[in-house]
Structures are given as structure tokens and as C-alpha cells.
Image 1 (cartoon, rainbow, N blue to C red):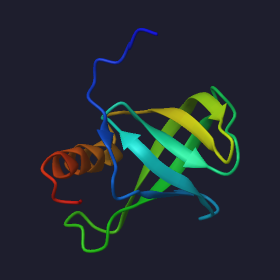
Image 2 (image 1 turned 90 degrees about the horizontal axis):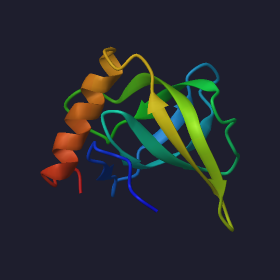
Image 3 (image 1 turned 90 degrees about the vertical axis):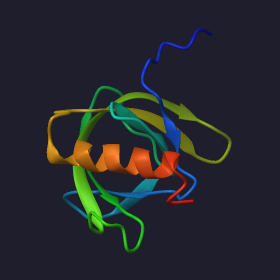
Image 4 (image 1 turned 120 degrees about the vertical axis):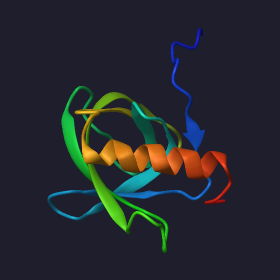
Length: 114
């Protein structure tokens, strides 16, 4: 299968926890992330093409704070033997959340969060 992505994805060795913005319920962890989206591992599936609002918890002591909010749409969802993996595309890329994503990517690339 040919890779269609042109944006570099960074594997998150320090898994970032993701919560539903409205309910604050823990829904999964980020596996990898780019400025355009993220791959999430969860116990429950997500509806493809549905919009979601997330709060991402940042590593303790992170310079930009302890969390950020970001909107995303599920683009695919696959079940493995034990969990679900879902690919999300960030919505409203100009929003504040993407500033956090860019900083995280830089810090992961420079091994500052490993």
C-alpha cells in the first residue's frame, strides 16, 4: 500500500492521554501525531467522519501547561485483537491547539520528552 502522507508523523513514546472535552472522560492515548492529525488507541471505536472535541493532557511540567483542547474528525477506525486504533484529522488548524502540537512534535524530535 502506497503511503499518501506528506506530513511527518512523530511517534509519542510518552503516550499523551486524551479526554472528551465535554465529559472529561478518559478515551485513549495518542500513538503518533503530526500537525495535521493523530492516531489514537482506545477501548471503544469512533464513528468515521464524525467530529470530536478533545482535551490532550501534556507531560507533567511541560512548558506550555498541562493540557490543550483540539477539534478533530475521525477518518478511519480499525479494531485490533485488544483495542481500536483511529486516525483523526485536526479541524481548524489555525487554532491554538495546533501551536501545542507543533511544540510537542519539536520536543519529541529533539528527545526532550522521551
